[in-house]
Image 1: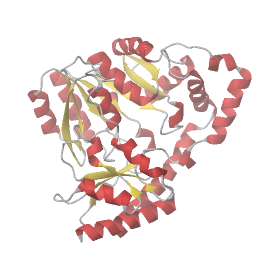
Image 2 (image 1 turned 90 degrees about the vertical axis):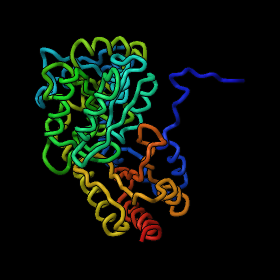
Image 3 (image 1 turned 45 degrees about the horizontal axis):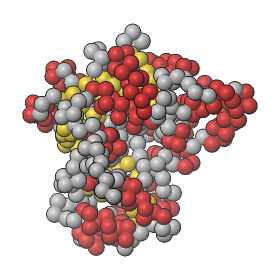
Length: 397
């Protein structure tokens, strides 16, 4: 049988992260390749208790069809929470519950972009969103990152050089994969560029609540006075990724279109999970929960950074994130990054993600790879860094 796939999906490739995760089925492999929250950060007892109460007291609510916009008490709770953070304008904004932030990002592209329109994003960036954008046959353009976020001069050059730029996609806080945070000055300048050239901004903020160092920086959404910022959030990193509850806040006009598109995709987000999220916000001490998980990630990040400094070749550069889940390591310019990553998992039993997985095109050059510190245990962090360090010294020193 000759399978002729649609143009929308024929060029999509399986995530390199998922391919590398296949190696982690070997119990001897230490995985720094995942992007999962720490297992010890899950509020299992509260989830168990709330789930029991839902099914005991209101089972039909959790098991019946619901509205596409999302469970009203959850939407109201999120609006109030975001309003207090400066991220929601009651007069102009609306909010919809989505199946994770990934769906928010995909639907934003769907409602705003025609085939051939341009989406500008950071390079490197989150592969899930990149593939979602590619599925709409857009012109995807990457702009390199500085230590404090996207390069503003090159961003404006990209806007001028490409036709029909509709959207700028950004992860300002503890970016995936680099762990970098965009400075306040750059957030302001990006917003001014978006206004100048009449472009929308998709601000993806899955990690914002897990800042464990430094000072909070206002979101781009909080600066929005023209209805051009779409804000994507999620419970995946602060409650549990398996429940697939995210949310999208944008102008009422944009959300009205997202609602229609979501009806085509999945009718509505899992209602049991939405009720669970709302009850968690209303019954449990969310702020104390966030304090606890920040402590977990702070410890894990600091441990990995100290082990990198102790073990890695001095020729490897690496980011020092103030939150999130990832550290971005960069090898010398003339090295074979893919060869390094393959040897790490095949010979040293440590899985990392090659940087090509996060580039706009896998042919784009990079000598970087991503490490995850949230999933492995302390013992695995120490042992894994020792092994990668041994490989790095063997290759570069």
